[in-house]
Image 1 (cartoon, rainbow, N blue to C red):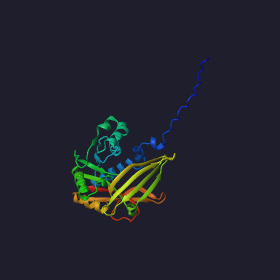
Image 2: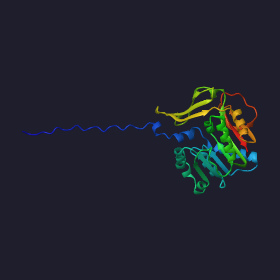
Image 3: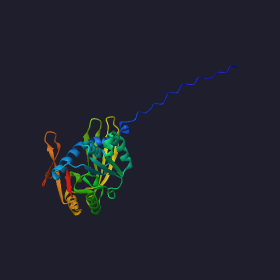
Image 4: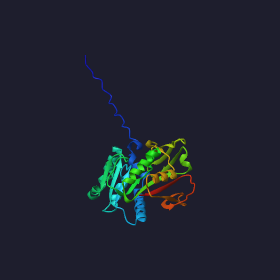
Length: 282
């Protein structure tokens, strides 16, 4: 009897699924591309500090610094500039060290300090400029909390120091909505998920979608209070700041969008949506 061996049918290699664009995406890089323009931000605070105080600032502190992109831009500007960035989140600080700090020269890195800490508790040498941008201070949802932060910020300023903040509002800011902005490689979506008119509790999300149909949902989420300009200015005054100035964004008629130019104003139109800067002088 002849023993025969059956031939095995070769197995096909399993197909390796190609990662989607959303799976390959870096949420911090997407955020910086769609939300931040640190060059313009530093242009503004640098020029306005000089206009208000008559000389250039050299020291800057960035509260809620995130990836420290703005602090890195500050130390790149002039050889005398020094910056301190403060944030509670070690993950985002680590990303900033890898993607921004590592690209600085040795001299620039020596003039930058990043601190993992609470902005309510982190002190340091007084600075001329203190930043609280991207509406980050809205995480303080009680008047006492926000006033306490403003007091701490004022204590961290030099005698001629100026705090700069940003703010947004308008009657559409109280609505549940989604706004989509097209970029070359993705679509940025800003969502007002909920707003409680009783206590001002405001929940927002950032989403990204890509040409292959994939989505990065809730890449960033925020639970804030939707503060109004009068409330913010009153609390800055209660915290001891001597004067506040509101800088309103102009309108580009051709592009039908904000111009990016901000000028001091005392009155403004009741727009559907607006963004402004605030300077609070010690």
